[in-house]
Image 1 (cartoon, rainbow over the protein chains, first blue to last red):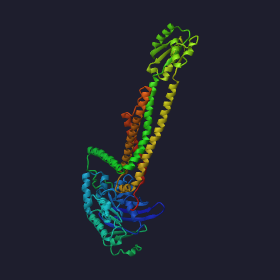
Image 2: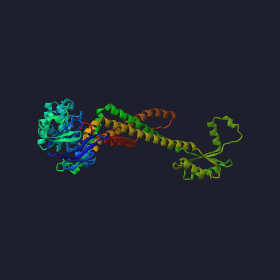
Image 3: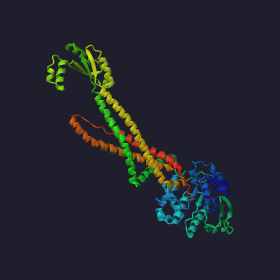
Length: 234
Length: 328
């Protein structure tokens, strides 16, 4: 699904964010991406979402080399990728319905289709009753779930999540992760960047660990992944 | 159209057939146009302020245009008043003069001929000059006989009348001819100058309108930076993001044009009262010509187009610049 081949990213100014990173995420697979702030997690996700381009190396999605995607094609490529952000990035002046419907409006769906799909997506995250609410009336966990609903409303085969539980307490974090697991169980590939190791430890999913731009660990998250692998967190 | 996953059914593709697609295209544009109008309505105070600025800017060239139009009309009525005076030689008898009048009447360029004999000229001069009695002390009549020739409308322009004057001066009986068109020529020159000035000023004001709209749209793009970033993240094309701003510019221009029309109409209406009072005083028929419907349409279409153009400049520059990059 996602394949990195010797990807290096150097930002203008010389800061090296990724250093010859190679890995592969199979289709329908769920995996975690961990590491400190500044280890390159965000850069890696940005490369997948075409928000940045690699300095060298290649990124493939479903066998397509992203280097060959032109600027004009970027919006169309992004429609195949659902993205979830730490601060949910919702439009605060529009209702939940309008926020979730956004990707469908962009793709030019019929209103009847839009209504059906938005209801479906909100139902999946358990927020169907909040359809007509404005975002500021929702809690942090609910906002994050609306963000997930928006990411899955056009049924993309790939989901990227950047610190989706960063602002949430543990029980809410678990809830969010269960939503991802549900989505993964119906065949959606999910890549979650997080530094919440407690969260990962509870689950047996593949984990890619970045340190200073290098991929240092590529294996199942389990007992062999200890906090000692990292410099102490916080 | 799914780009990365060819096996993935593009949900957009199955929805419509071609003919339906064209209809949907227009429906969607109409929806977006109305949505942009709704956005403006949500901040009525600032929207109206911008539109008022545009309206006032547009009403100035429009007013100048109306004044120019009326000036031109005035000139054309004065053009018809061009008159050639032919002063006859002293020794020409009344019979010879009558023959000359008949001859001149035959010219196709001439519409009216009036003969003023020496005596008539003197009486008229006595009445009009105010010298009255003083003139009766003169031994002989110093005034020549005059033939007043009114050209046909075709030859009533300064150039045409001058041509006619040259022809009529060839007559034996005529000492010299006079054409009082220099003031007409001056008026023409002034009107032409004004026309150029109005054109230049109009151009500058239309440029100002475009820039005002471009700047307004720029601010509104920067205000909605977050929204644009989010739209780009969920796969909106630049065109999709641009469209509401272009419609906003269009509405600014259109409504600004309507405000300009209202301003000019109100001004003409208020002038009309003063003008009819003046007309009564002068015992003439003065009428202000307002904006015709076609001119109204031109004003509206032009201002809407300028609005779109200003928005286009801003949008092309700034929407491209905004790329989603923070948190993720």
